[in-house]
Amino acid sequence: MYFDLVPVVFAKKAQPNTMTEEFYGAPVKSFTKGTVSIARVSKNYLNANDKVLIIDDFLAHGEAAAGLANLVEQAGGTVCGIAAIIEKEFQGGSKKLRDAGYLVDSLAVITKVENGKIYFKD
Image (cartoon, rainbow, N blue to C red; front, side, top):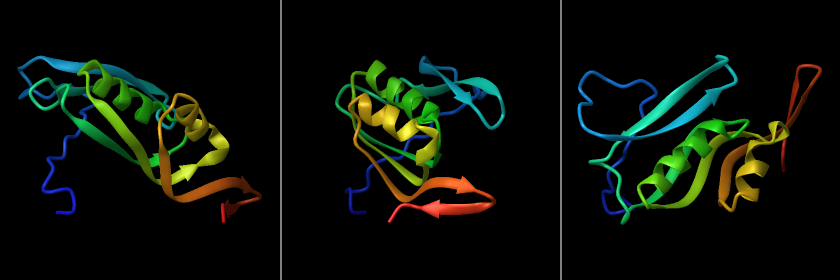
């Protein structure tokens, strides 16, 4: 509601049977699964007038966020920022994204995991 009922668009990692229209696609590597998928967004839902906030649950190596940013840029849109619920700073993704010029903000930042203990940034 704060954003005046802005639509939410999800990028799909596999082409659904119902996606018959043209789409923007970008490779996204999953370090957890050891796979590369093509993230897809229908061209009907993303265009040059769009200003997009990318939201990721876990930001580790930054591959998903970078792939989604690529989709936005293919459409000519603007990535306004990248938000993460949990950022694993020690895995370098947030630095890579910031170095590429993106604004990155996270609710919780893990600086390291050592001997089974999780360390959070103050």
